[in-house]
Image (cartoon, rainbow, N blue to C red):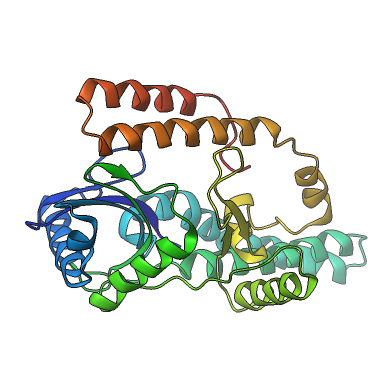
Length: 306
């Protein structure tokens, strides 16, 4: 669990490190430059500039830990929830314990607050798993997912085997900064492979892992490019400490995701068009046409937690 980062890596060590909304990733430009310098050196050692006959490469990555970019969000939105609950629940439980001793019928309420206290501890444990101290490059990790584009071509149509072979070479070129993402290739018509992948996911999330993203091996613009399958404890961060309560789960199962999926496909198609224009050296205004369309799509009022 980190923060999505798009890296424009140039052979001379310069470039840009963007958030998913197009802003500079770190407020400190020297840290952006330090990450890009390491990425450029790793790309050169992996032979990717030479192989692609390009002096630049656009990478889709995730930068870890989550706290390196989202410390304000964690403090203001998540840690504050845990702190408030830890301050309030013990006092409430003490009152209820004394009330139960007096023979009043509040045992069910006390049990509900005990369960909530347990849920809060799990909630805090879940988000702390993605936080650790960093100083400069020390402690930072970059997980590359895909090569998006280089001079003259978009690589979005390449299959996952092509992509993973190249990002693994990139990771091997600088294993101190770059980290490999585990993966499984599954033939969905084979029940044994599906069961094995399911067991792998259950083991991964059972020991605290975030989850997985399911992607078609052969990209197809008509289908979702990726579906997030998160684990129970990770989803506690998204939906709150009491996410696993039966009533909460029943409401979540009633969600309608058709609008979200349709919007994702439209944005993905626009993103592919933008990559084609960037790779083809189109004038900036032609690239901006598509980018503005993506930004307009993102202004649609859709619950981001879906």
